[in-house]
Length: 229
Image 1 (spheres, one colour):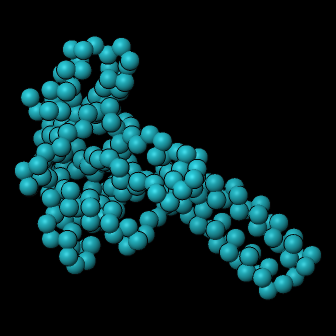
Image 2 (cartoon, rainbow, N blue to C red; image 1 turned 120 degrees about the horizontal axis):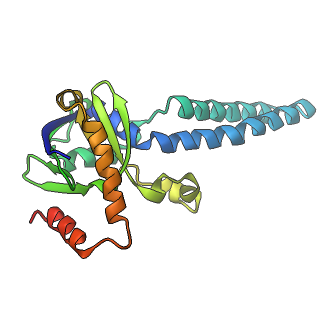
């Protein structure tokens, strides 16, 4: 793909969209599981209450109904409570160059340089630090929003509901373990084929670098790009 360079601005409102874009598929899975489990469970509780009415029975029914409603909301309109995720929010903004982490989240705002090239995504922060992400680390899927699009990264088993339900993984799941690529609307308007170019780059990168028989030459090219040589 042709090289594209732009500055990305993320404030707290955009961060919420970024976070939701990365995680809403997983939360929909939770919503589906919750609905499938608690709808019949609620029906059983209602029959049990009819057979043997009690105050506790009413409470159990109400709680179960609440979980059904939450499940349905997660399926059709996923939502995230961010003030219980303060460490995630502050860590993301700090990593991307924000120095003043005091005050309300609404004051959080960072701008960083993004470069899209043949091998992947490079991000440079105001601190001078630079990070690089090969195309094969992304899923090839994106979420549209009024301000642009968010390409999600591939977090493997971390997006598996069954995997995270084992042991205490559901409590310890990393909700932002990689880098979601944000592309502003203005950049897309200037580069009308950019989304398709990125999808093709991700697909080609996976074919090359996730192949067990990838050549040493290709490995060296990627390592040189990551190491900025």
